[in-house]
Length: 458
Image: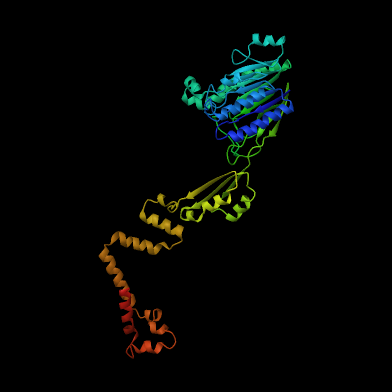
């Protein structure tokens, strides 16, 4: 039995062209392939839509076209994307076949092209006995988005964050006991839900791991469904166990930059105890993402722009704050003027100055200075000596000591060799004139008189 599984259509004014092109292709392809049941596993719309919105009309047109070829089950998705009540009108839009809206936790049997829902969360024994005379083609276990606010009101706010998975796992286990009986009777069982599987991968390559996700793979397989059709995550992925399958088809189109993999819908072949699913790619828009760890390479962008005529392009770079003016945004926009769309994003890195590592752990000024000297490879002894002078002496005493030291050094005979008179290093031809400016027979100590004056002048 062949199913067509669509999800995350996200019809909205901004997404209309992408959603309708891709979903329209998928509906036509599913009809051509001979699918006998259509399943839309949530988020048919992107947000609340007015009744007269062109995007709502386009979605209704495609769903009605699908229902002319096969029965259709539509599941309630995320409340922010698909506000409660959004799907109610779709139940009235059926064509040749029925459109069933699954907006509560239940099991739904498809018998002779009509949907029959359980009175409670699962079929009771009395309801199951009816299937002896008229056997369903398939029984769906429907688990739409759960209102976490209602859960918090019943179990408490602290438990709601991590308790949702336990509540859903308990329901899936109960449904599994019923589905085992149905499979033993040769009836196909299919689960349909909308949420996050712990450990799945998003369309941007991020692994979703945490305690607040709706499902674990163990809980989903305990539902004992031949096929479990999921929505919410925009990347196609599958998990298999003993011939049974859990899978996301991903979003019908490409709605964000940086999304990985093909977009499309899943065509399922389901029999009691076994299922297979194949992704059928839709003509989603092509996006090019170019990231630079520094200023953009204009030569490389020029090469990309040559083949980006009908594509959506995002260019991102990061530069230091003092170099932000080196990037010519207008030149980049002109380069991609022929692209379907261009998104330019820059990240300005502020100048950050950090203190010497570990300096805050020192409790004394002497210790901090020693730590800085160690990190900066500076001899600490002279600086520690001057620090002591600053700590113990007054300004006039320190100045007097420095002057006295300089005066003593200036009158030391050894300086006559170390610091000669400028005449000793004068260029050729000028030495005689420079020496003649001083009285003949001047001794070394007398020569240091002018050096002493120059030092204090400096």
